[in-house]
Image 1: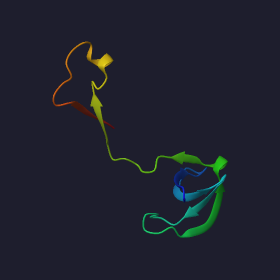
Image 2: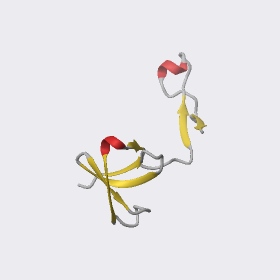
Image 3: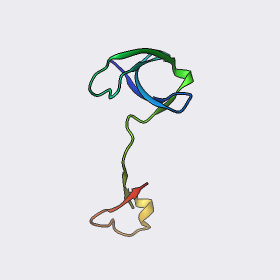
Image 4: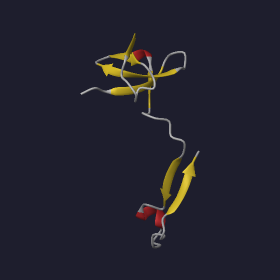
Length: 84
């Protein structure tokens, strides 16, 4: 099974690739359209792995643990908030 990764190069630029052991074969972007290799390979140790995608916003549910409620009933509807 192919393991796709998104990563930051040492210069800070981002790219996508196929993880092959301790190496990453860089693929053309946008990677969801094709998995054409660019010929560039990087060592996994030389890059910083990133989340698979960059979210536009993160929606969170508050008061979702009994310990956070302090004995009060859970709100209905749930308390939602956004993280920047």
